[in-house]
Image (cartoon, rainbow, N blue to C red; front, top):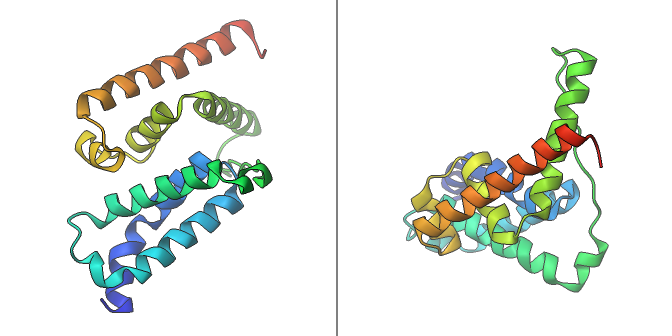
Length: 169
């Protein structure tokens, strides 16, 4: 596969790779490094890429595995917790603050979820993959994905209601 063909195949889902890496690694810099690493690995496998039915699912699985390995490695102690800022010039300052607060609470709650629930929630609700694609990426049954997603959503919902009912705590 030539470079132009490779870019045409890989570039449409590069941002999804980054968002998954960011969700798992939290740090923007670490997520960028992970994304670059996955793109490099895909390039080294470019002759075999045409054999895969779904290159995007393969790349997402590679990203998930790379990030989980990274978190388990000794280097994980060096990961920085850096969050990107939410900006929109068309909204009032109050709404920006409220949106940023809500987003950061959801992110914090998602970080506390069990690994499987965190991944399923990210892939389904953020990246908008369907259940079959997630099943292939995570090597899970669709029923197990629905259960994990339901539990993750319930936990996020309960913790948000708790936060809004009782204040920050």
